[in-house]
Image 1 (cartoon, helix red, strand yellow):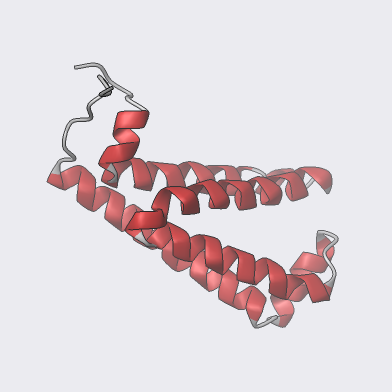
Image 2 (image 1 turned 180 degrees about the vertical axis):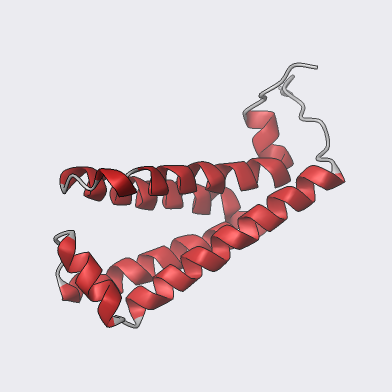
Length: 134
């Protein structure tokens, strides 16, 4: 049985916009994960402020790097986006838990950008989530 939900081919403009947006996300999350893995004092102190013990920071950084790598690989990008959504949901919950209202929008916006970058460059996702009728 064939799907009637055929996505239009991705335009060059959308493809490159998605690639650039996704690359920026990958660069930032890789930097963030690396800082956690290296246990940079500023990151350890910041994490302690949110209630995370210093010995958990390494594992959190590794999880972020793995999710980011999956997102960066075209074949596993959808799985990476799903996992990053969970990671960023946890970050949002952390900010809500400690009433850090000024930082709540950041992981939410980042999660939206993860999916927007993927949507702009991925034909399969457009077929799954058609935002416009032609």
